[in-house]
Image 1 (tube, rainbow, N blue to C red):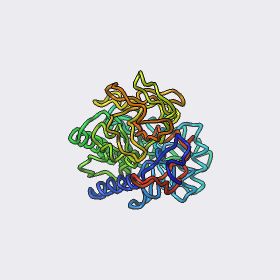
Image 2 (image 1 turned 180 degrees about the vertical axis):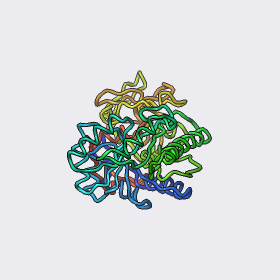
Image 3 (image 1 turned 60 degrees about the vertical axis):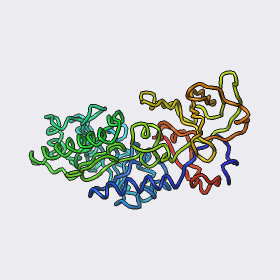
Image 4 (image 1 turned 30 degrees about the horizontal axis):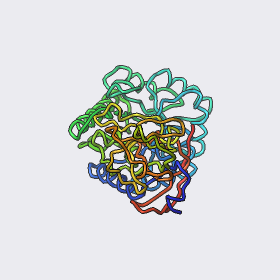
Length: 379
């Protein structure tokens, strides 16, 4: 099949760029003596994840228990569920443990630990728990310097049904940094916070075998992994415009795009209308606060080459995308007749991929679709 035969909108994955991104991150972390634990929340496909695991011991990070179940069914047992656990999910966690998953969950409150422990005792299982750390004020987690950290260590060490596995942090605020030096400083802040928390737990007499850090920006620019046992990264596989906007990658490294068709024009407004609305691209506007606002996505030709016209998707409806020049200048509609195929690079690979059921795999600018990789969604 060729791209010109696909019904649009369709999710396109450039396998050569994917493999290049995977190798670059793997080589970087390996060169620092670290271990990579890929986050598979964006991929949601065994075909992608097997490629990501070629140079790693085989552990993964998930953000849903459905991901854990799917990848366990495909033979991956070492899994970290990196979202705070809720009582409604306890039974699913216990089922995965009984099915052979070496599953770890995270918690940042004694109350959550006590709830989990009580349910685990009743179910006759023991759940490994990582203490979630907050090193940057981005979202959940406990401060590495807090008394709560030690209280959690004590609860996980002395309460039947749970056990202390280590500490975990995600420096999500790094997405608001820009440039190599700023991101390297943030990576060190992340590392120091996690390692310091582990040292405090050990000084209090608690075993802390796992020190887990990670985000694609900090993973890319970290210069020191002393004291860290693993690095969790996810969007690095595909990259996106947000990552390009803060200097993590180049636009040319983005492996994911959405193939759309031109379905009309508003010539007096300088608009090209496509069938790629927010149901295909997502509503993510992650570049809006960056120095270069990419609208709802940067427009390329059918081969994935960025157009010299500097076209972006300036607005979307559910099934319509409005393409215009960034400078709002005129567009000759004869250059983009109805039926023209374009590809749109996403702001946020995770959000865009979640709108689609499969990847149509290509290699570089060649027009052939060389494979189709299924992906899933939901919880």
